[in-house]
Image (spheres, rainbow, N blue to C red):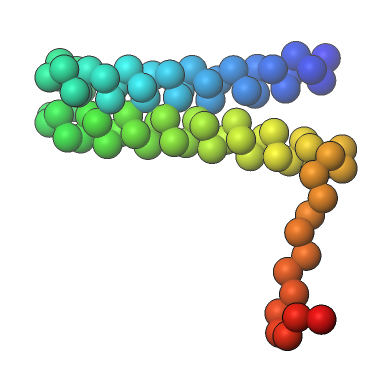
Length: 82
């Protein structure tokens, strides 16, 4: 059951990112969707959808890998190098 929920959790941002790509493509080919008032606004919203969806998927993967200790957390050292 947990795997199905995780798959759905990644599926929805993937759809949002794909829709963002579609919005950006449509604005480059001068096809305005009536909801948006200007091509530039349509492109910007598409870019936000794309970056947001990809960032969510990437953050989910990094969180899962850190939880399973596949990625070690970096320890930042302030001051002089030893």
